[in-house]
Every structure is written in C-alpha cells, then in structure tokens.
Image (cartoon, rainbow, N blue to C red; front, side, top):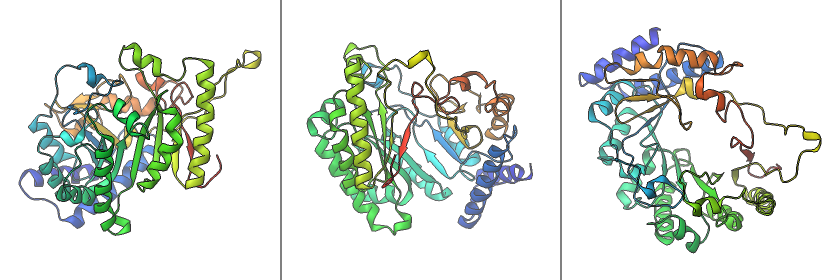
Length: 383
C-alpha cells in the first residue's frame, strides 16, 4: 500500500498549503488509474489507489420544473455540500482524481461558488464532467473557462422542435438553449483539437418525443456532438400524465417505438453519429414459453474507480437507485472508507453468483431489456 501512503503524504502537504507541481499531479493521476484498472481486473477486495472519478453533491437545486421529474413536484429540502466535506474532498481525492462531477441530482450550473470550484479543478488538474440542461451556460468568459477544463459535456435535451422541448423542459426556452450551445461550441472550437472535450446529448423517449427522434439525432450532429444516449421515460412521479406518455402502454405503441428505433439507427449510420438506443420491445408472445435471451453481463467498474460523495459526507458506491451508503467521512477519511468492510464485501461478490445487496438488480451485472440495457450503434457501422 505504498502508493496510498504517498497519497496520504500529498494530502498532508495540501492541508499545509503546499500543492504538488502540475507534473507531479499528472504522474499521480496516471499511476492511480493504472493501479485502479489493475485492481478492477483482478477483483481485488482492497484497492491500493483512490477513485479516478468522483461525483460531489454540491447542490440538489434545479431551475426547471420538467413534468417527468420529482423536482417539479417538490422533493423536500435543497441540500448543499457542507464546506468541511468539500475541503476534505479537495485534500484527499483531488490529487489522484481525473474527473469530477458537481452534482448527481440537480442542475450543476447552480453549484454555489461555481467559479471557485472551477479554480480548484484548474489547480488540481482535474477535468469537469457535467450533465446539464444548458440554460445557465451564458457569457463568453464563463464558456471559455468551461471549455478549458471540460472533460465531457452532456446536455439533457428532449425533442427536436421548440413546441415539444418547451412543453417538457418547463422554464427553459428552446431557442435560448441552442444559442447557449452555439456560444459554447465557439469557445470549444477555438481550442486545439486534442483539447476539445466531447459533447454528448441525453434524450428521453416518450410519446411526445418519439416522432422527433431522427430529427433530434440530426440536430445533435449539427452541434458537433460525438454521441447521443436515448433513454426510455422512467416513471418517478405518480402523475397519470407521465404514465400516459410511456411507450409500453400498448402493443401499437411498442410496434411504433420499434420502427422509430430502426429508423434512428439508420439515421445515425447515415450521418456518422454514435448513439445508444434502448432495445426493441417484444411485441409478441415468445413461442413455447421460452425465456427471452439476455445480453451478457458487463463487469462493474464503479467499485474500483468511481465514488459518489453526498452533501453531508456520505460515501455512496454508485448511482443505482436505492443503493445503500458505504460509509461517511465526517469522523473518518476517504482512505479508510474506500477500503472498509462494505466495499471489500461488494468487490469480492459483485462478479460472483451471489452479488451483495443491490448489486443483484444492477443493470450492469444483470443486463436485459427490462433492466434498461442499451444497444450501441457506432458511427458509420451496421447494427
């Protein structure tokens, strides 16, 4: 565990006001990733590295009221990360981390003291990974700053027309958001090619957006997007209006969805756009009552490379709905919690026939259409 001892010493230096040089930070991150990948490959119970990617719940606030999201119906308090927790993240995790997200639930552009957070990323040589509604991405100086530290920008955008988008992204304006993205692209394209972070889009499939899916892919390509992820609507609120938008409501809608997915895959190949599409619905009974085939499982990487940190110091292993907390750093530290008994148990069992707890229902470990498996259509290739 000599490398972790080295990282602990770096933490002591940071707390003492001494930051490693940019060259040392690059070397630390490279070595940390190498060790994390090796530990993952051998299902190591104990990691001699720290997470390469972290999500920090700086805020759960959102400025929109989308009808399919719990944010629109009141979800209780708006949490903000306690400052001592953030400072612990800086000192213990930033020296080895490569990628940081600012929020797992909320609009990251509403992060308190956002400019200071960008400064910290600059100082520690970490890249920003952001999933945003892009409504607050304004101002040439801010966009240039974002483009310079961005590792991946993913824009959540539903519908290819103003009418559809404005009806779903309540509080946002279609034309304004597209103008923001054009301005961001101007800042992105000023950089050298190797410095330009990829631009991705996420979009939700429902009855309102299904007919516009091919046009949406063409819109994403116009904005020099490298990838689009298409997801089915998940009912997270009890409103009947949301249930009525779901595409599994009848055999007719399932068939219509399957046709739209085929067309979308063809469009993606035509325009050279990488896209993840949900699998087609099974619209007829399976002959003989045989079970439908499922896709092979994927090896989990979260338990060795990723960590979610809650606003009050909670250490959460992944983004799976209902996942338990693996610890808390209020009275501990990330070095200890990263290799605690819970993490060791999960790592030991995740790829076995008896995964621990919520791992049993994880869409990575047990892939199927019902679990939200995705089919990848690479740019310019046949499906």
